[in-house]
Amino acid sequence: MKKKIIVRLPKKIKKPLLKKATRLNLEETIRQQSDELISRSGQLKQGAVREKQGAAREKLGADREKLGADREKLGADREKIAEEQILIQTKAMESASDGIFIIDARRHNFLIIYANLSFQTITGYTKKEIIGQNYFLIYGPAADLRVIDEIKQTISRGESFHGEMLNFRKNGDKFWSLLRIAPVRDKKGNITHYVGIQTDTTLMKQRNFEIEEQREELLHVTRVGKLAEFVSSLAHEISQPLTAILSYAQAAQRMLKDREPQVQEILGYIVNDDQRAAEVIRRLRYLLKKTKPAFELLDINIIINDTVSLIMPQILAKGKIIKFELEKNLPLVNGDRIQLQQVILNLISNSLEAMEVDPGSHELIIRTTRKDNNTVMVQVKDTGCGIPEENMKKLFTHFFTSKPDGLGMGLSISRSIVEAHGGHLEAVNNPDRGATFYFSLPINMQNES
Image (cartoon, rainbow, N blue to C red; front, side):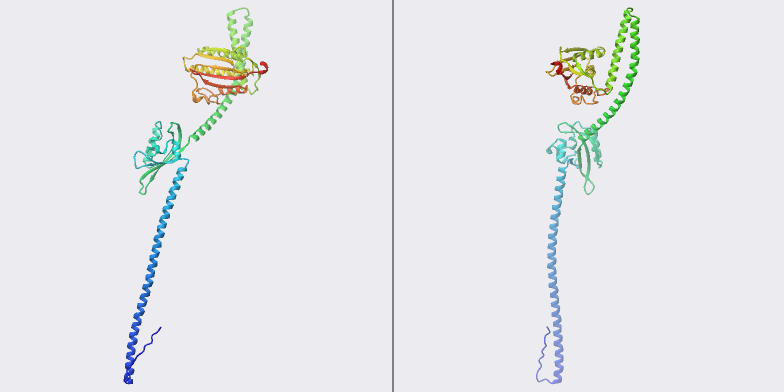
């Protein structure tokens, strides 16, 4: 709002002078008022600016306080996120199925500072036993020192190690593991730790071994099949000259009848051996043919005597003694003569080979008994080296053999034959020495009644 300026003049002043004085006074007053207004306006403006600046400062201070609070909150959030990430990583490492461990690289004795639960399970050691322990002592005293040296040299060069090795648990059990160890570096590139992952590959190794065994068995079956074809053809070829030899020997016997008794005796041996060889060839061809067995009522003691007579020259040549403990008047069994002879022949041959390992073992016992009202039992007991405990479970497995030149089929075929007859074939080590193979056969109940 504009101010009104009032100028009061003396009454007795003359008009010209009055007008001039009034004008001058008015101009001065206006100038003073104007300066005052300018001054006050400047003061007002400065005050407004100051107020505005003060408000701006207050707002800036508030903004700074808010920014500080936001920074504190952001810092707290980042710290919380970092803690959550560390917790998640720790839980993930603890939940991993592979063994995870961390080694302090700043020390020369490879001390373990962390090991997850799977690592404890794999090695068999507790957390207290692992933490602070030299990592390479966890492998056990029987570990391969060359592999351990290779690991040390690799990680000492700042490189990662990756390989498979044989380990030992706390209780001494062996296990295979896939090991990966990598260096951990700080901002300057210095190695501070080693982190390792250990995977138990024992089951995988066993499966691969089983697959390899099956592959070998298939190849073996193929070779045996080819061998069977060859043997069948060979048996056919051999049977012809054997027939000719038999005919010549019998003709000589007829020509020298009642003369030359010594020559007659020799010819008798030739005829008997020829017939025995022909019978072996016939049985061999029969075994290789895919025909159904001919079951009939059999006296198991007669089967044993006939079988032993076939192998007696081999028994005597090896300097062994065979003893019979055959129970008399055993009931007849229903079976195939050739197949049961094959079983007995196989068991006797195995016993003779077992006794060859020990020069002091000479005695082989064949025993028959009536096990119960329904079965008879045949036992072949030797005084040889016995059966290693680790081989007992796989003794009757196809193609398993402990002999360098064995096919691994004899015992497997023998068990199959006995089971086809309704019986069971087993083996046990004797308390003193050697082993006993025994099988049972069901009695023919119609004949028994």
